Image 1 (tube, one colour):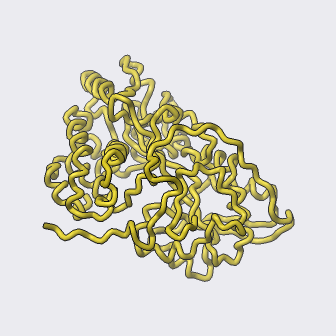
Image 2 (spheres, one colour):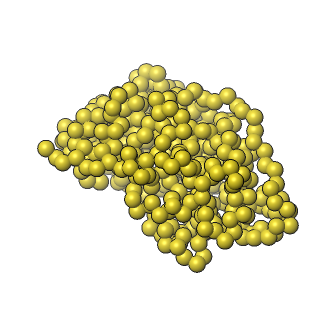
Image 3 (cartoon, helix red, strand yellow):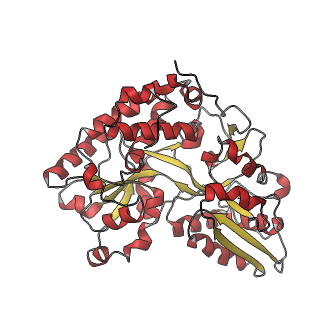
Length: 431
C-alpha cells in the first residue's frame, strides 16, 4: 500500500473558516447597505504605493488609481508586473524596491515555500489598521490559524460555458439549463454539422476542468470525512474521485468534444477567444478569466466586428437541477507590513475595499464582484440563478485539485482508466 503523505491542512498554514465549515452552500445574498469611503488622512498627504502582480497589465486597477487621486492627488500609485510571479514575489518582498501591496492566492496556503510571503503580510483585520472588510462577501474571506486575515479578495472568478446565443437560436436550441438538455443540445448540434459542439483548449486541463471542478466540489461536500482524507493525499482518498470520473465518462460518450479540432489552439486565452469570435463555435468551456478578455478583443476580431453576435456566460448544467456557481477569489491583495509607505498603502486598501470601488473594478475587468452587492455584469447574469458553492468553505487544498483535474483530463482523453487514476491518487502525474 502506498504510504500516505503528510497533510499541511492541519499545520501552521491551516485556514480556519470564518463561518462554520458545515455551511458549504449559500443562497445569493440580499443586497446589504453599501460601504462608503471616508478619508482617513489629510488630502495633502504625500507618498507612493506600488502594487505588484502577475497580470501583464491591469487597466481596471489603474482606473482605481485615478479615482483614489481625487482624494489624494499627492500620492503616486503604480502597478508592476512581475515576470514568473510565483517565484519572484518573495525576492521582490526582500528587495530594496519591495511592493507595498502584492497579489496573493489561496492555492499558496498549503505550500511551505509561501510561508514567508504570508509572514510579510499585514493583518487586515487588526482594528488599528481601520480597514472595513464588511463590503466583502464574508464567505470569500479566509482566516489563518492565528486568527489573522492576511489577504482580501478584490476580484472573483467562476467556471462555466461561454455560449453564442445567436448560433443556438439559429438551430432552435435553447441554452441548456439541465444536464439532460445539455446532452440534447450537443446531439442536435452534431446533427447540424458541428464536429465539436463543446470547444476549448485541450493541451492542458482547462477544457475538462471547467466541467469537472463544480461537479467535484458538489459531490465531496455530501460525503462526510472526505475532505481531510483528500487533503492528506492518501491513496485511499482516490475513491472520492469516482463520482466526477463517472460523470466525465458519461459526458464524453456524447461526442461533445473533438480533441483533434480543439488541438488547433495554441493557448488557453487569446486563441480561444479569437476563435470563438469567428462565430461558428456554439459553446466554449472556460472560466471567468477568459470571459474577462472578451470585451477588449471584440474590436480586434474582424469576423466579430463584421458579424457581431450575442453571447453570455452560463453555469454548466451538471444535473437535472442545473449548474453551480463555484465562487472563489481570482485575485487577492495583501499589504506588505514592512512597507515604507504603509500608511498610504492601507489608505488605498480602505478605498478599494468599499462597495462602489469593488464593483467598479470588477466591471472594468469583467469579472464577478467580491462585494456583497451581488449585481452581476450582463454577461454573467445567468449565474444569479445558479446554486453558489463557496470553494474555500469546502476546505480542499490546491494539491487535491491538481490531482483531480489531472485525473479527469487523463480519463477524458482515454490516457488512463478511472480505476487507474483512483488507485494512483496522490501521485498522478500532471499532463
